Length: 71
Image 1 (tube, rainbow, N blue to C red):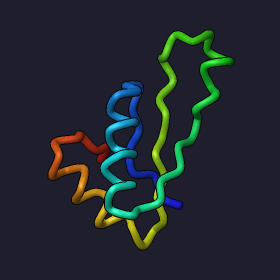
Image 2: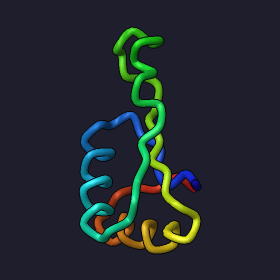
Image 3: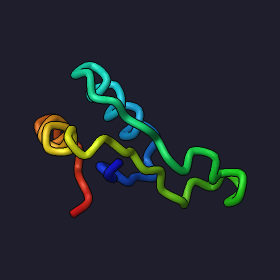
């Protein structure tokens, strides 16, 4: 799995997951339960992971929908 996106914004995470699922790209969200450790403040980012062979297409889909990518 490769990191595709890292964000504190739950709307960006949810929208990205919906876009990728619509294109049959499997997505795994990491760090979902970190809010227990941080006290639900929302300062720790969540990460979206995709298979290495889907990374190029997933980046293109997010870029086409104006979702900022890290790096």
